[in-house]
Length: 298
Image (cartoon, rainbow, N blue to C red; front, side, top):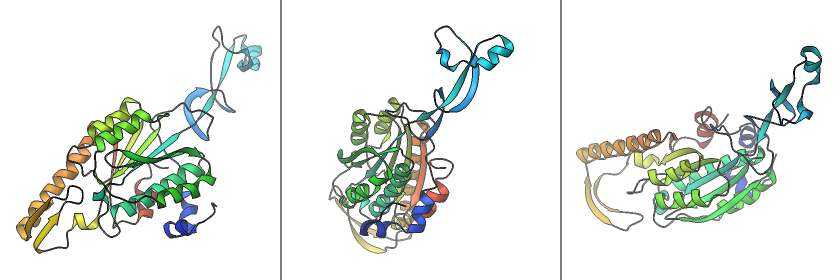
């Protein structure tokens, strides 16, 4: 079990950490890494675990010929092995001002989710990196490996505060271009950007990342608990608007919210990206241990 800090104590119980330790990431693609990892890949290579045979071809390494088969059949067959992958997990969290809403805030919830996914990757000996997304990737935690990196990851996340405007397309595309190693990319965001996010996501797809989007909304956004005459202020632009929140206004709001949710999911489906939707009223443990199983985790 990883060592604990006061921040880690607030984020996770020992019981949850032990459950997270049994999880691992699923990827639809295989990735060539810098060193051999712990993950088994369907790519055939040279490693201790036997996979299959194929006929010998000129130029093959004779060390991997099965001489027992040659003695019986007078034919040369090469032994194939399962190669281990070195996966790089890129965790991207939206830290713009719109994420600082709700109780708990979307940012607080997302930060805890990123920490949990980072722990899963680090104890699984994957490389894990973090990008803080606003109108650009303002800071990051470079991909690193090993469970002893969990506490530095927690300390890094604990120093991040939400604020600023959103430009998902620009920030995501910039991150995808600068990332040294393609791998698994997980975006945690409320996706509240008038410019959308499709162009930014395509930057990852062009480099053959395996991409997941976790669309995070607050309980208050899903079911507003307000009424009467209100003065609404946009958290990022500062624009204000007077509104009367009555039954008809709520119906219109719910229609527009549903259209926004449907469009976000449709964008992901059109780009063959795995889309997950989460509300901050759902315990993070249930999201990770139950709803992400079979798609992002196993």
